[in-house]
Length: 488
Ligand code: ADP
Image 1 (cartoon, protein in one colour):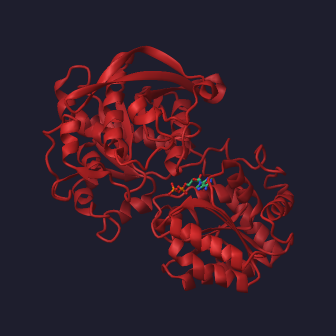
Image 2 (cartoon, rainbow, N blue to C red):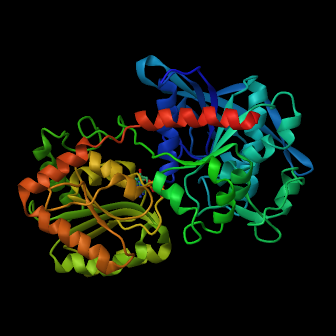
Image 3 (cartoon, protein in one colour):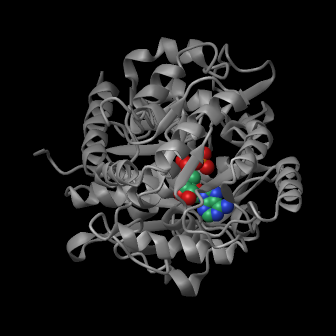
């Protein structure tokens, strides 16, 4: 696509390799690079948490500290700079907002009582940093509730300020579940008392996701199916009326995955590298995974893997029943995940009951995640809600066949195996019940025993293109649309 180069600021609370909680980090770490590779001047900005080490990332101070409003006071903020490599020797500029009180003294991205204040500070700091840099982007691409304040500010106060006038906004909803709902005092803290109360906000509260949606020039979410689902009262998490109102500006763009990070042919984290031609090499990764998980090393026993947050939205309530059934089928199961304590407990108990079948690694471990994608036969994602889902795409790239529920991006990325025509890239179930999930797993286990047919499914998975190239171009089109919408 031939277009004028655009200037874009990509604003996010997390980005690989700096800070990662979930899929947003993967997207923020790879999409801007893909857009940069198309010739646009896109730059990434995120807070500098305490875990982001200056020596590891070669962080350098830019200019003098500047002040951002925090209620009646002001707080000094430093801007740090570094870069990430892009193809052909180009680099993606990365800016980090450094403030001790709100970010650098914290060892996690989220989960603090003052998260709403923290990300208000981030929003103001991002806007202030542009002045320090004297760099005026055409578009600010804001992501999730943490950045909802930015479209709201730009389309109200910002319209009256020479420097900010004309900056368009794209607001991406990676997950509607998290909305950043907080008391209305936040508006005083943010010096934005003028913001109108939206009908969908609880009385006395501000909903930052809703504010982002209400003010952005263009809105998108991370798969076409999820874009349709969130317009319904069942899946709209209370925001369906607002989204309906702005439907003309709402789009769905499927996420991609970073093909360099996730490449079984070059992956430094897996014991044995392979590609579609040398797929037999996967067997050694399976053995290594069984050993590491202290499960019996049996090449022909199907090994089901999961890498997930342990959260209700990921379908955790189905898992106890599904695990008992898998054990009854003599299958093996390996999980990597962290999250809600009740699910930690459940997996610990199941592992104690069935040590020869179940192993749960209850932690966050990047390297182990690669080993599971490379070593498991089947990847399970029984999500209740799934905006896009990266796990199934990564699994497919590694020849690990997905079993998924027909929801959100899982619908757009996995096609159900059809025995009659020998088509499909996985096994899909619809109803949110353990029985429906077991039925799909049973079909997978049955095909697993037909080695040639199974190989063909694995190869189809590996041949599916989940790289960012197509989606990056769609984002550029959305930036152009945001510019058009902003000026009207
Ligand atoms: P979500 O964003 O809802 O968490 P996604 O499937 O979109 O779900 O993205 C999850 C990403 O986080 C994947 O890259 C997955 O490999 C990774 N991930 C999830 N849990 C862990 C964990 N415990 N250790 C390492 N990586 C994890």
